[in-house]
Image (cartoon, rainbow, N blue to C red; front, side):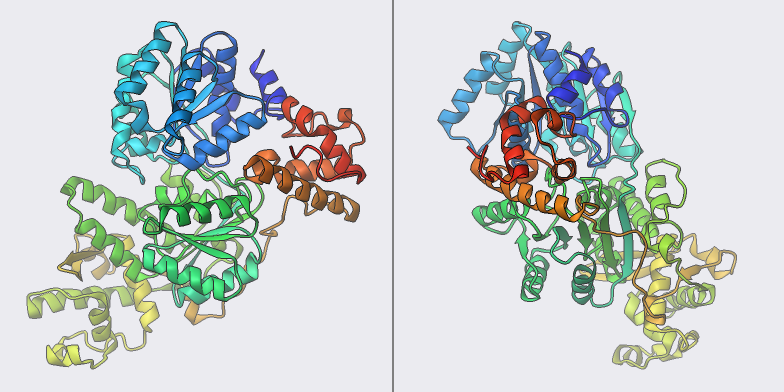
Length: 620
């Protein structure tokens, strides 16, 4: 069976997207591959179709290395729905269930087996792989979330390093590493750590054109978030990321009090509570998950309409990975972040206080600076974001800066006064001070700290009285972004220091132009393309009734099968069925997402829903 036939008959898709065809053909032929493809781009098919094709050619079993239990469960469930033999080995199985799965594995009854890296590298599991290999029944290794192998990646997991054993022990078995996020440094580390120097590299565009990027100045983050959700995404699913567990609890409680179905998720919660909240988010509708970055990787929920950050992430890779969880269905979605100077200080402090080597800290500071540059940008966010991944692009017309170009003011004078104050404070006192004290001096505020230290006599005292605190904070963020100021942390206190780049700004050789603070002008609500149009937005009245009935039927089936609703059918498939109003099984054929197995399993039930005869057929 050709790979095109597998795509159509098993998965129900009429054609490949982007580089999928080339990747799959290469791997089916036995080639190694490194695949970089954005979230929602169809990475899973890049190893699932080769696994099916190679198994049908008598080449055996594919092992998928995945770090996430939720992802294993949902992908195995989706493969079962498509008629593919798949299984997982993880801690959710009883010893008897695990034993039975291992026996099926050794008998060659499984096409794809999902397992965590810790299990794959155990002596027991490797012994089972040896037995398969000796019989020529070990077909392919797919290493998902491959950025976890790199110390430069945003989610480094040391256990991934042990996966080099796969190449050393089974040199003839093809391997593919897949990730949605890796800059050039991380990519090179993946190649080296997994010994993929000879592998073909397939790097897709990192662009997610359906996502609108918006970054706002932090004023009252809780209120700003609530306003954003109520205005743009009422009743829709979303993820809100916070830096601390305490903050997660606070925000989840605040949203719940405001009538939003919000749940918390962080590593400090009891496992059963955490799992229940995740299940409700994945399988329900309109749930907002408030979480630390412990949540999200491997969550395949397609209809997440927004991802919000209340605190600045560590780097662009993390930001891109997290925002990429919105709009996996290809429909419009929002990536919204609010940040302030304190976010920058906090991230700098975490880097400075980490026990890592100085070389590593320098790389992390550079990555943070790149994210800060994105946040402070006055030009297209998407152009900046893609440039970080070495991809050229044109202004997108669908980010906040494109839709509402920010007003810009010349902040060179304010920047020079701030830098001069940092210099003179160090000259006068022999020590450095933080942002708040520096701004107080520039603005001429006689605080207790200023008068106690005699800093009202500093020559720059009051020279910036015309600038607001908000303006000066924005200037400081920009100075940090361009490297003209550095933040150092010691014993919990953050202080400002000049750099080599400070000199050019002080001399007026480098102009500093900033986006105008939102406190200086009325904030207009961004208008442009509709942001949260559902899959059925363009359906007529009768088709919408059919769509609603199909969703109700799907919910019953999903509950009976203990699976998320989207594993049965995506909204886009239901919308296409509702629009076409099929009257026979033949009419259902060739609808995207409706493969042979699903047509056999659910075709009659779908027709019954369309004709209004039944809404429960096929739920068994």
